[in-house]
Length: 129
Image (cartoon, rainbow, N blue to C red; front, side):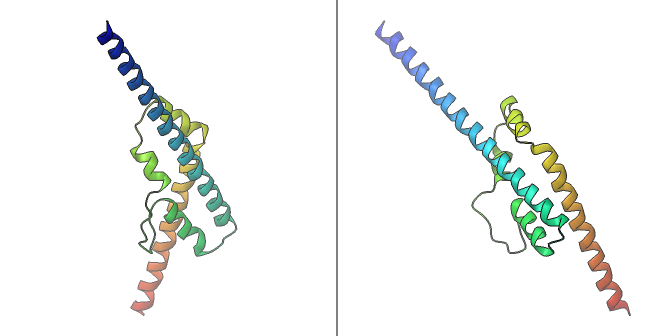
């Protein structure tokens, strides 16, 4: 009887710890999604105001990399990439409007790509003359 009681307590404690860990992961996912979205929205506004190179650097840093090769300890995107994918993960990302903000992010990356290609083309033409 004592053994089954002990097993029940151990099982309950284990489930409670798992629930606590799940809640912590859920909190981190929610916070990271929110931070990422705020960052993207800030960068979109800077890009609309044509704030030059600043928004480009911020975008690369937000996504976990930059030209400076200064590696941050972790970024919000990393938290989302390593988090276990579950229904709650999807819900937390949706309630923080992550999908539309990632679309904005992809558009900004495309702008970066096109500007970089145009710059390289100009440099190539200047060398050719």
